[in-house]
Image (cartoon, rainbow, N blue to C red; front, side, top):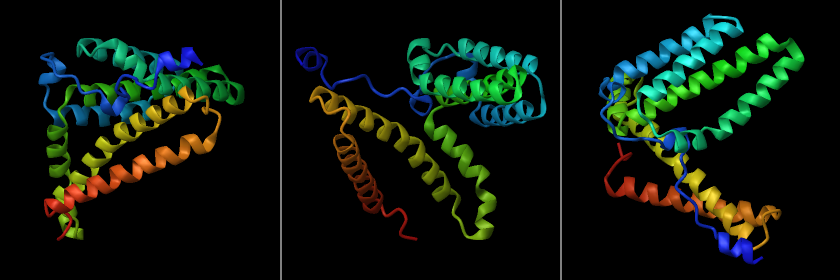
Length: 215
């Protein structure tokens, strides 16, 4: 018990792929946000079109090379990507069992390459720059009654909310573990739900105070 108490519920801020922005001066940081998003879209398309384990492994190596070129701190990055690594291993293992090792390697490497490239984009681009690009891309939606700024705001809130909720869930789990209740579902679900509802209400109040969403 003392060891759990000594460990405490405190933990470092969540560092998942959506919460990784790191200011810097690398060539990747200086690349315009629109170009990085376009590159990410092209990379996703190529990963779908190109088949075979060799192209997938090469794509993953290139993605890791871009990550290194961007100078993003590797420790928090790999820590944030750990769930993706586990998911890729499970999916790749299943595909290997069901369809053979070439397909398993291809699926796992494609998934990791795309997530690493997405991480590079979010880690090297300020959120406001990304939202500006998304607002410009959403301009055609005016014709169907959607305001581009509202669309960009919704996406921005999503990007901001995911790390907040992930951090809250991890803190609740640590608190339950410190009390020896880490196997009790109610000790995990109820406090996490309360925190998430509180965050949603606070966000709604902040938007209402600024007059957003009234029109």
